[in-house]
Structure formats: structure tokens, C-alpha cells
Image (cartoon, rainbow, N blue to C red; front, top):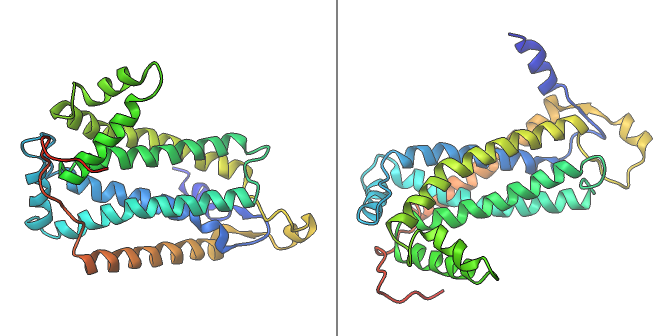
Amino acid sequence: TGHRALVHRVLHEPILGGASWAYVFGSLLLFLFVLQGATGVVLATSYAPTTAAAWASVAYAQDQLTLGWLLRGLHSAGASSLYAVLVLHLLQVTLYRAYRAPREVNWLTGVALAALVGAFGLTGSLLPWDQRGYSATQVTLTLLGSVPLVGPALQSLAQGGPSPGNATLSRFYALHVLALPLLSAALTLAHVALFRRHGVTPHPRRSRAELLKQTTPFWPRQALYDLAAASLLFVVLLGWVIGRHGADLGAPADPSGPHPP
């Protein structure tokens, strides 16, 4: 199967300038994407994407499904962590000037993935069909409707009618569990492939001679850095979720009620 050559290519990638904690943020994002996918698949098995049953199905997962509160809490906390780690990754990439030639396309795929993280958050907030998620989605759809010329058409397309309802929930669910994950997986593969093609971007203030002298393979040092960072993040998330006993679930959405932004 050629697995030995593949393993060698993965583990023995040269890290120009040597391993660094500054390079762990991309791996942390990949870890969080996997965590979101794994917890999301389990949660989807008990979710009903209808306005009549969505809240009850989430409450069932939270209160009756074995360790459902833990899975939902990890999914919620992992989503918030994605934003934080994404900002750190973008800062590191910007400070190291990894957006310059020949890495422009890799930078653009990263920006596209950042936009998809926002789309995941917007579509996922409605799925519990609680008052908070419903109100937040109304604010988002109103902002979408204010786009000049095409705003009303976009808002109508997104919500599937004059106001958020069954069609909105179905569309957001399809985007959240099908379209966005597939698009994210494709962009992630392209992002990692381009990253491997050009290698890491070392700190711009280090000389070429110094970088070449300190170059090391990905395994074992950088791999251990990435594993340690991911393990620490998972322990923090686990402690946070256990301390809060999962994620909050508000009262069921009431379309006739007040919707403070």
C-alpha cells in the first residue's frame, strides 16, 4: 500500500529552524475540527430538525442520553475554542508573514476556513431552538436582509419564508451537518497540502544560515509539542464542561415573544 513511504513523508517533514510552540495552533485547529465532528455526529443521532421537536430532542440529549451532557458541552465549548485558537493562528501567521509569496493561496484557503467557522457558529446557534438561539438568528437574518439590493432576497432564501420556522431550521441543519463539513474538509485538505508543499514559515528575523543549521524533522519534537498542546486544550475543555455540567439550554423558542439582541 505504500504506507511506509507515507508515514515517512508525514513524520520526517523538515521543520526549517527547528520545532517551535508557535507552530502548534494549526494542529490545535485540526484537533478541534475533529472533536466537533465526532461530538456532532453523536448528537445528530438523537436530534430532530423540526420546530416542534428540536428543543425536546436537545433536552433529551442533555438530560437522558448517556453522557449526552458531556458531549453537548464539549461540542459547545469546542466551538468557542475554535474562535480563540483561530485568532491566535491568524496572529502567528501574520507576524511570521506567511501570507507572502509563495504562500498566498494557502493564506486565502485559511481565510476561507475562518469564514466557515463563523458560518458553523451562525447555523449551529439556531439548532437547539431555544429563545437565545432563535433571537440571535433573527438578528443575523435581519442583518442579512439589510445588504443593499440583494439583502431581502438573501434573507428570504436563508429563512425559507417571511419569518424563521421549519424551513429555516431544516436549511440551517443541512448546512451545519452536510454542506459546511464537506466544504471545510475539502479546504482543510487543500490547506494542509499547500502547507506541506511550502513548509513552515520561520520567524522573519532569523538568518537563513541559522535556520538551516537548526532544521529538524517533524518527529519527534514538533509532534510532541502538538500532542502536548492538544492534550492540554482537551483537559481544559473537559474541566470547563464538567464544572458547568454541559452547555446551557434556554427555554423553548417563542416566536411571539421578545427578542433582545
